[in-house]
Image (tube, rainbow, N blue to C red; front, side, top):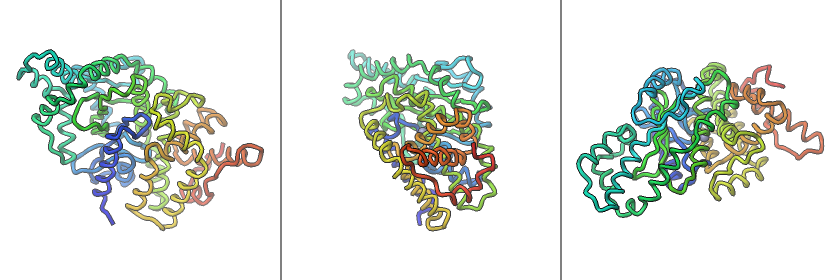
Length: 429
Ligand SMILES: [Zn+2]
């Protein structure tokens, strides 16, 4: 059986590969999290930070993600919040994206690395000499400094010379104009509106705080770093990604961050469950991917992949078509975990397979969330975000009703699953 670290590493690599091929996540460049090593954190956090979409582990702290904090997020939000909010406000070279409109949102974007790279490319393009000062300006940027820390945490060598070689490459020079216009477009994105839009899809006590680093770097992956201390979302500057898609990605990730800020209660609620049931209850949190899709879209009647690539759109259509089948796959996984047929790393591996490009954690989660919102209202859906078990219970109620009437037949969650995770008594609507 593979150890936690190797599984984490594989997951991380898988994610990066996904990013490289420009798939992954609706927003093609999703963020991912790195996770911290297994340490004094709770098992919930370990598990969570593990998997899914992320990468995890590497001895130092990367960030983490949990089933309920999908691909992004982090842990220890409160601590992070305290430290980060202060830092964010003081950060240099930052563009305040959501200045003061809502105290729950504190996010800044720092384009300094991308702009320094573009400045050098423009000099090369104009046949001007690139000076030592130009390189120093690039190396001194906060995104680059933290990128180096992150690569070190991933046990990868990434030096100033490596970046220099990359920036001096013929290939990158050929992208000069495209990168310049992409950076300019992304800077114009009305991210404030997108962030504000997801607030109605979050518990009112939630908060959102992060630094966004659009970066031009050799590896085309995107990820979240140090989510539990100083959360940073690195987004590879991809000329094929529109401003709208970029904004949608940020909104999606912001939803994860916001939701993770209220996860402590749920962690406590499921803490005393037997291990298999706790693992299942934790993984129910991965349906937060679907909730983030809904929140970023802005409503149940808005196409959640409208800004996505053709590949994402086709994948989403498949997920919609195969909703019942996919739900049954996850249902079987939950049963296998509860019955001990799969344990430990095998649980993580199987659960991770449901991320995919945008697999069942997204599509089934989205389908359930839309049903609950349309059937019981958004307030009910938000209760499901506070206690991840409720989403399955309330979905079942609505699906049973549909099955009794002439509505489309819908697959159901097995009653023993809902019983084993000790779904709270107020679960029914
Ligand atoms: Zn996500």
